[in-house]
Image 1: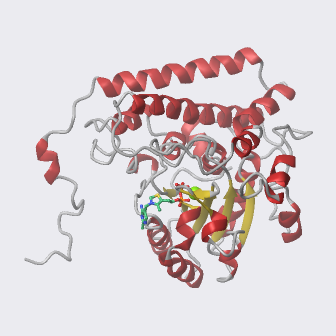
Image 2: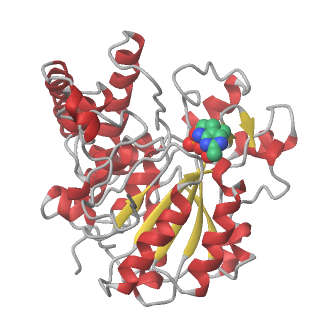
Image 3: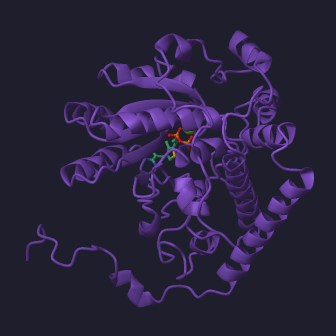
Length: 389
Ligand SMILES: Cc1ncc(C[n+]2csc(CCOP(=O)(O)OP(=O)(O)O)c2C)c(N)n1
Ligand SMILES: [Mg+2]
């Protein structure tokens, strides 16, 4: 089996499904799949339906090997604990500037990484701590970047919104809403042009699908059948503005259909469903069939950034999503199917806690970049051909 990101990150875990290879789901199956509802005030019918949605539970059979579930669990716990610590440190003013947490959305990254190969590229927006963590960047380098230290993965010059790690093919955190969408198409173009067989996964928030550049990029990606997976991490809000208040079309995946792009909604509180959708899209991209647009229906438990008290949503709405927490669901599956004991999972929790603590010490003990760093890395290519004297 081809080496996947999970295998690369954990040296030898198996992300293949126990049964036969994942088959593309028929449209009917997709349309009837249980999805978390988009977000509206709790008093209306849709919010009621969301509250009636199934709570965190285990499938009757565990569909993947134990190693896969344990890898998902460990990765998601690392994302969660790392960001909880980052939130605390922000409160203590150890971390400054902007800081957008991914807490609640962990399954989006964990399920996708396990379906990709090690040389695939990933580009995303500014909510970007979880992606490099799952791709294998050291938590030390990410924490140091949050501290703006020279040992950070962007040499302390990017901060929370601009993580970058070429070693794991993470091509960034981008602060301009939607800017990464044409760049993602461009990266996929390069992969196709160079016949590498790799693809690019390009994730964005729901706010980004209303940027004009997305539509141009979708058109070109389809025209040239680029190996790209566009993913909208629809957490219901762009800052404090709900999808319903900004978009006539609230089932965001249908936007891809205007370009005949295979598009589907995914219950992204469920890591297995994310993995399966990305695996299908990756298969299509590698077969030369072009892009896919996936709408990950997810939720962020915290505000937009550290300065947002999130008063635009109800407690009930938040509690409803928390009751379907993706980490709890994987934990439940592992225990129900006796893949590990409570003690085994506690040992993972402790290991992750120590890793996070170590990253804080590493960041604290690192130096800030020196002033001459201002003149480095402005353009990586020394002979950049478009500069004229
Ligand atoms: C072009 C542009 N316009 C406005 C902003 C200000 N801004 C920063 S984040 C944000 C909301 C984006 O929300 P969404 O795409 O849903 O991502 P999420 O924060 O939910 O992950 C806005 C409007 C920006 N960074 N770039
Ligand atoms: Mg959003």
